[in-house]
Image (cartoon, rainbow, N blue to C red):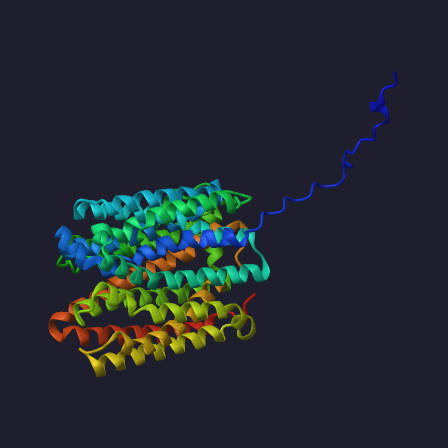
Length: 483
């Protein structure tokens, strides 16, 4: 019997032909929807408690300092750990971290909803912020690694739209849930609603989100992580808690420490990069023109946006005696026009470049002026319908700015640095939001006893208008065209 194996041709590849590089998996529309849903959860939760704070205060006898910690504890933990979350995703896999983050966010949301007292609620909010920091950076990193060209531009614009709309939707949803009082849960529903949503997103992500990681993962930058955390805590914690606690000695000591740890972070990171290590925030990343100019503009934009959302929630409920639902409903025009503008962004920026951001910033300024005039003329009889036109203009301007800024920051970012770059951008945004609550919120609350709610609100709106003027000037530093 002959050996047929001798007649079978071998199909081995020639030795000199290099193997084909692995083709990265593409993000399907359902996968994109899933990661955007995951991104919306932590963004919504930054603001969802604003309209629930009066109810939390009555139920748990929390007091002003504890109430601000409910907001600040989440924001500080969130902002502090975001860059680390991006780096871990680069190392162990972004899909894996996304799933871990979703599970942790659902469990910590449950802990918030079941909290028996104010101290437990604050502790649960801090851990919820840490879970959000694991989850959110993986969204942008996954989009960067699994999309290209027009699909990436559209995905980033949808992410930007989600970021802005979620912030406003948080207060609308919070007002609705508190007003409906589902099964007698009251304010607890604003946290418990996250549990089934996180579970559904986890199941979808397990099936639709491809795994990606950096081709050259690096170790976590321990000194950089510690210094960045210390810098954010020493700045944000006293600014958010100092006023409510009566500016005790610890708040001034932390503020005095901030310049030193901030300077140490700035000095340590370049040294780490020069020695061949990969720092938490590589200085070479900040030397990319689109990253540098985009982040510089995201800071004041986020400060104004975060402060506005907090101040409006307090002013409408305490000044105009709106209920939680009416306070949330007043932001619906802003949500709608923001999303419309964010969808138009990809086409507009492809044709007009940075002029889209400049125009959006000017429209935002016009919306703030219109809102201030409305408040001045109609207070204390200002209705939800009366606020709608200025809110709509304001939202449209903001929707032309934030999604385009995010696209600009990511436009020249190497895929290998998608996680750390996305983490740095979202850290900048979240730090700005927390700083806005601390600064504009403190200004508003400090003026209340002497000038009343209307004039305190007007002062905050005019301060934000000055910030918008600064962002318009910074827009001139952006690249003229966007890839």
